[in-house]
Image 1 (cartoon, rainbow, N blue to C red):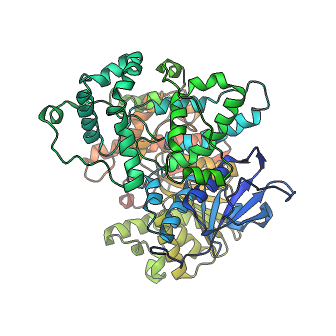
Image 2 (spheres, helix red, strand yellow; image 1 turned 60 degrees about the vertical axis):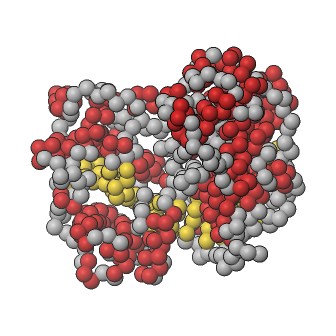
Image 3 (cartoon, rainbow, N blue to C red; image 1 turned 180 degrees about the vertical axis):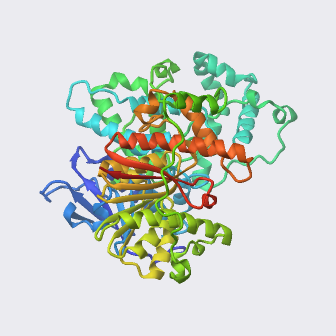
Length: 630
């Protein structure tokens, strides 16, 4: 068949199997992955269900697509690299390159399905306009967290409770219903909203419909029939034309002057057709098995609650119209329900939903004053800028006599930048090699192209080095360099770091951005591993679902969140182009932010130092935080 490629590497897909309830495989991550395989008609992977119990006598009838060959294995039979990761996971042969975590694995399945048959462009379009759907990690993206973590987990818990007479509706489902009520933004947003305004005017609707909708939901319901053949269907028309002929409805005639000149504030909002907006994406694939099983219980036991989810019910009905969805769902044991058409209800039901902690505050950029009052406040409490002495400021690797593939010059960078990268590596490698013992496991978090991990694997052949990186292309480049060196003590894991569950002795991270540094330190503390981190992008630090700033008790007693954010903002002002005095203040703010991190680690039983890398010119972000468990 045209477009099919057969020279693909053999890959194994490992999925957890806890148990099965009424056609639903637990965990839901496994149900979602099998549904995507069915939708893509993907036969590339050898699928292994990994049992948590001893018994292998399980029934897979009506829950696993017949075209998918499945092998049942135990956790002990997993390749060693996979035993260090949360499932789902995909491994290429030989077993030293692993992809782990739901979003990473699903994106990989889509890429491989398209590579196998490039005529299936609709499969690649599941990744969205810029191919970024669910690419951001859950700690950074609220949307990824909702789809990848909170919705599946909340519905698993809901299904477990379903034996009760009145199971509790998960707050996450209400959050999703609220999200579906929000206006849609797409790349051609202005053009489509002007088309919608034109259709509304043709239907005799006033120009400020968007404002009227916000003010009066009842009016919106009264207008729905009048708009049915015009503006109400524009979103559907755009969405489904994309699914069938891969193009949006063309408007050959130039828009009338009053449409072209309409203010953006007078344009009507676009409404959701699918989970992310107008287009069917991977997010819909993830949500479908979850929402289906939720609705099955609702219809059985809490039918009176269905009226609370008109937008979710409408999404559920629309998704069935997508080509191949019904067939794929049927092969996975999903028999769609026929739901009554529900009227949209008032937004009042969303008003009590609590947002993620700190979101409102972290988006408030109205900081008063510069860093000096904050620094003075800390000084009054005895907290001052303080660096530990560098253990060996003149030490350097013998770069000239190392194999070419070890050097960062292999990473396609200028000679000046490569020199600075070598200087940065001198600092980290010295600290790590002086801590490491034969047999230690070293993890290079946020490894990028492997500059740190490859040097360590080469310098410490008796240690196992693992590179963890979210960006696939960076990790592929690292593996290519490793293969050139013939390294046998190195693993590559494409995953968000929370999906790495293995034990290790030393964690290292060079320029982990924002809260990624805090995630690395937390990961090391949980494992009681030493850490050597060089933070970056202080301005991106903010409260998240896991972290609140300041972190240490000492800083919490002195600074508010806003005051701490002042330090973070000014800590990014260390670029060489800035005036010396401003850079000095930036360096001091950097030190104070990292001192807070150090104090927080000390509260968990660590000895921690904040060290300035040598030479300081090697990077504007030249702090190292070195922690050793006591």
